[in-house]
Length: 287
Image 1: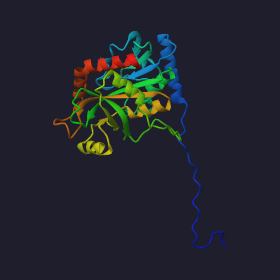
Image 2: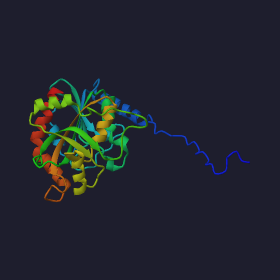
Image 3: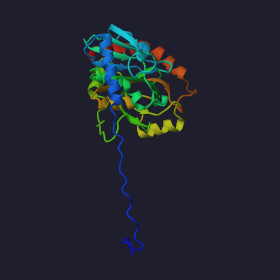
């Protein structure tokens, strides 16, 4: 008689669990890019990094005394930005606070399908080059009627609806104070009128539907866009302190009385450039 009794179920075979452990490739590439950045501009390290999203590039002219600049694509692992309204350069400046700042005038978005590591490569490069503070900016849709296009909003928290993460395997990172309360307090010393809100990242590249915008509001969101959250998570993993700022470029779908178009994003950034320039310049003086 078989060792298995009649009617008794066979035990399920043991299937080994294969974890998605991180490879060293992405971190190695970031280390190479960080070293190339320091070598190219003959600096010991950077202290703070700014990532400029849609509508923000024109606001970065007065962040400090220029040290130099190059195309992002001239550094290891970077590609030229493909989204209108993004610059394609890396600038290095000495801020009024005496800090060395790297200004990334463009980013890779998740919807470009280059992989999450490409999305967060700038963040990891900044960390590899010595940065301790990261300022992430974006252009976004707003859910609050009193936040008209051209309104900058501090990000107090985010909801990541991309279904992706820059973390690999059992990497458990606390995101309780991801968008630093200390840095938000400093930002309020520059502009006490800055509102705060929760940013919701969708995958894109299509704009959110009115139903998705309603869902974001029910979940607690105030802003909707296609960037920032994945970068912020990678920044926390790398030990960076994060300040997030959204520029409301349009009312979100279902709230806006007109169809959405990327030209709105660019126009709102151009019109808000003096406000954004004053805000970034003020931040560069206190960070």
